[in-house]
Length: 327
Image (cartoon, rainbow, N blue to C red; front, side):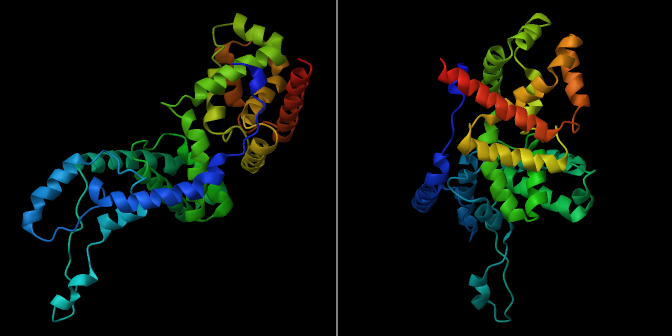
């Protein structure tokens, strides 16, 4: 990949088109509900059971979020009372009715994800005061469960809790946090397994380091075949969330978000390069190999100077820009 194509700001066309797209999707939902059979139908009598069971078998593993919202599906699953039959009861009581059921595959898949969510929520940032409150852990769990239900085909992947946690600390409100997390995942989901984002990052890192610090690049190449830059994996997966203390995470994330519109939509690459540059003498003097570098950065987690690293990242952007201008 050419490093000269990396400096590119993003106007995020999703921002412009989201409302229009959502409106179109809503119209499609209305027209397609009956055809696709995604929304659950009331079971009024035994004669409908066979038809309902056939529709259940045709359902996919995950109800498509483009056809029905998680709220609608959830309400269909849990609502067992209806006001429609109140007139049929002289004593005014409500007759419980069943709104249908989900396939065993869907239930099993969601249950498996719940187990993973519970494990990660229980250990997510427990040293941070906000998450010593059990109510806040419940909020974190609710957000993750809602996201997984709306995206069951993707499911829960380790690391998602790490991305939700700073947002929840900032907003302290489930709905806003969930909305921001969904938007964040539009950019970060390709970095998770089965996406191509991580390979693209590694390719850009190789090109940039070869141009901006050839000596360090040569050292990496000589001391082992780890030019795939796997030691950067956690950095890109979590937007450096585990590399800095909590207060600095907010600064780094705000900088990344602003840089996408003003400097480069790939500013995360320059932050990663800055983390290598700031410790380049240690890496070179100690002739660190792949294992040494991974161990070193694991030990340095939450001990980096975020402002210094961001300053170096901006300098690297300018350095690359000068090379482009003089090309």
